[in-house]
Length: 339
Ligand code: KG4
Ligand code: ZN
Image (cartoon, rainbow, N blue to C red; front, side):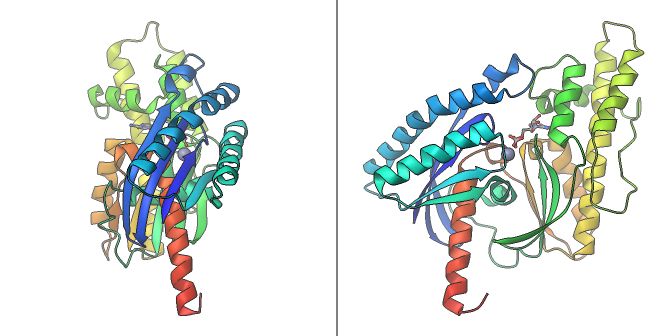
């Protein structure tokens, strides 16, 4: 099975080729990404109409390169997988329409993929075979932390999951973006906040970790952003470098602590065998370290899967993989004759 995948849910145009032999045997042949971050930076966030225009321009170029590679290798595309939802509607529309046209022109079946499934399994991606994801992955807890989502899932198979809880307002990545802006840094705000926090003094400042004591799996980050805003409004301008670093550290600690704490509770409650991390915020090294430390304290010890940086944010490789997982698990169910 050779999947050509298309991702256009936000501000990255992605086209990937994944060659799959069986459930855990895949080779990522190509993973093309055309980022629009520089274009949106001037506006402090993603502008849907601009994203749409860029996807429209980039998709044919990336697809041409992918099809050239397919021909060079003497292969044939068997499936076209595309991000169907959720995301920015105008951006999604370009991907959906392009996939449908390509499928029609080349006579290849098209498959709509939920973008979140892509993120949930992105930590299982490597360039070559998927090495660590043999049997025994489920039940898994999926932690999805991106610019649009902060969610905890109970995943029981490659095609079944339950949303345990999510943010009531801003997503974790969105909070990083907004706080970075308050501190004078451009979108996306995660990387500068992480870098600034390294220079911050531990314990110099503290912001409350929102909803950390609530017994559910819900999150809320808009109050934390407002707490940072009110704190900064009282300070003399221009803000000193030291204060900026201290605020970045205190904010990051408050945001990440609640994410790690609720993930721990979910792992324990469902006696999960693994934790699958996904989404742009997964690139944060402090979050990764906190999760590594946290899982060690849980018995039985869950396997922790952290996506490589290039697979943490939006990309088409994860869309291809979600499609391959779904196809192979349906095939194996069919063979056994039960679900
Ligand atoms: O998954 P993603 O690429 O796009 C979607 O939102 O679907 O995630 C982007 C988000 C942005 O909000 C960005 O600030 C955040 O991920 N991010 C980070 C880091 N790198 C990216 N947040 C915290 N720390 C990082 N190192
Ligand atoms: Zn995403």
